[in-house]
Image 1 (tube, rainbow, N blue to C red):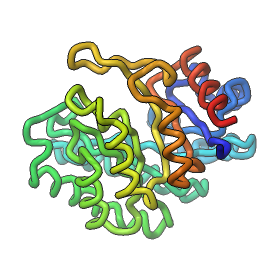
Image 2: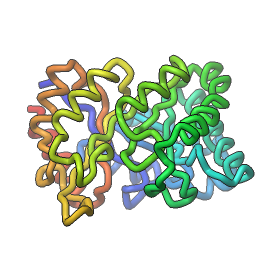
Image 3: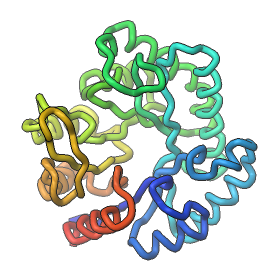
Image 4: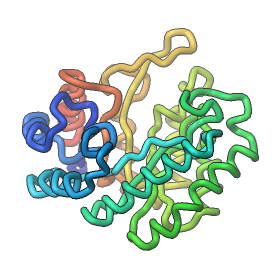
Length: 277
């Protein structure tokens, strides 16, 4: 088994100072972060203090902690044009931060027509919604090309870009600076969760060469609701997932453990380490 590159979300850690992150990484045995600077370093973000953020990231990098993704978390289909414009400026800020720190990748999910509630809307999967997301992302192409940076798009079942086929259509239209984050759990709901193996294999067959990041999380079903669990105990069998990634020569791609904090996060990281031995 390939030695896994395992990370966590910066805003899931109790102490998000560079010193706190470094200490946690050494305790937990994580290799890197998915970092949303506007969530982890709120004061610096509000001041648009890019020099402090660059210094923080470089401190992490010098300690051997990689930044696997600068997460933008914005809704490209938001109906408030002024709000969307401000969100796009935040993405552009992340692209510039990525350029200065040689990170290379920023990214986001694709949101919902419900604006600030990223939940199911009956028109999310329409052609018009797809086009709105495409038009928004197209506006980022000059900055991405200038920075030599890729934008990772993540499909989510209830969002506008919702499965492997839809994501393939989007990224083909947008071009080479648009790559992929795969979060298998986010492609599943009560109707298709039992088919997770087939969904994984199909996604990898369509996007393997474009995938730059994996999100690992797990869940059980209570009725139609997805209830988060540790990686070891949910519906998705990560022993099988890692075997498929190894067979597909994708086990070197970084993994972010999501939706867990504290001891459950530590336990899930340790679980993945045991599987990779």
